[in-house]
View (cartoon, rainbow, N blue to C red):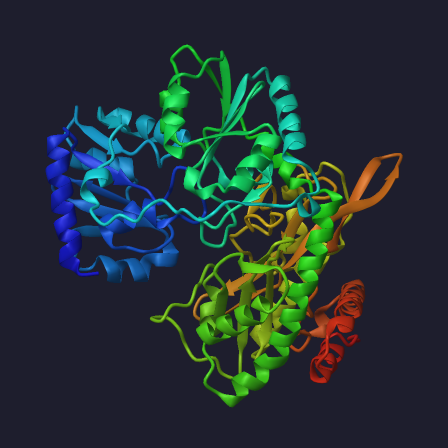
Length: 597
């Protein structure tokens, strides 16, 4: 994008701001549904600044402009912002002001700052109001300059909505709606506003293709004791889907009529989650309505998978494992032959997954980080960063797929040739952490924070740590990142319960050197009942060999070696009957062979 285009947009924005009495405007990286991936229609921060990273906030005043982003994007943002009116603000770097501090230093008291209430959560708006109060600056959330200024703005996605059959969902929409109504009654709430797209898709047993990597569709739902209304573009609803919704007790109205419905909300109370619901929804409700800020009752129900969903996971993981075996058998010879890059490896793996039955899409953008790129936790190769992959060092490959019967998420770190002693040691530390967490038995209802240390213990003894969470829930042909439960170092109170899915993915990242991560998706299952209550355990759903070549076996405990050998035996037993190519079979036997001290 030409730098002049950004400059022209900023100048047009300033004209608009003067016309509307604003001294600044804030552009987040969010949409009305608090999604991880944002449809192009709501990429206003990228439109105004030219910066295309996934995280960042742009702020424009009448005389200046700045963009805040994190360390993942310092280099890319500096390059993209050069020659534009924007100054880069490096988050979590000493001396970098917060947005409110910067605005307080830039603006006079009594001025007004704009934020679009449709794309900022209630929580974010309330916090910004509080932060600006000491500077006597008022926040306005009822204006959106993009409506007038973004001339070639992409439309809201309009992919067809499809039914997720009961044979894969395992529970009807009407049954789920009934369970949510019971939860509302327990909280004395007359209704619930649902804006997160994966919750709507799960509740109604519907799927779509509006959002990159996530099989969801742009919509809202208002659920009360008497009605369940889906707000969605009618062009996306076929006669078949309309008939299905009617049979489940769901009515439909146009997506853009949610505001009219909320203005006329007829009940005394309504529940919404301030952390995920956009501010405009809250402001539209009549003043006499009591709004209950409450975590969504859908998330904890969605997190516990039924027998049908678990069967679907097993099917999806088997298909994924077959594709991964074919890929890993291909990988090292292809790298040794030359000509492979991070992007070509990504494309090869995706093509092998696409050959599997019920494959729909990737579940997130693949992280194929070779060498030093493996130390960038959320690295995604682009044509500008793509590098050749050589027959030496480590490749960190974090990937996943959306199959109609399940969602997968797996990381393998692969030795492509000779390794340094440091690479071997770090790889072994990570594997030990993965296995220690995989083997843990724990009381039902434990917090993921209580167990997180299992994955970190060995590396902590050497003063090593990683800053991301150790595990997250995985959706059932839904978003690959699902809550509310997690394995995480900072306190996460959500309980771990039987039939939840969760990843196990410790890692070590050394800037400029290498990165290691080993990840399986796990199913929480029953272990035992007794005097001290129910205990649970973790069963691996992922079916793929873990590279044994980089392991320093003398550093492994015997029970860790035994676990890895059991896992590999299970992987081989599950995948081998489905392989046809004799070379694939030979490779799998070698890759899952027992290791010994």
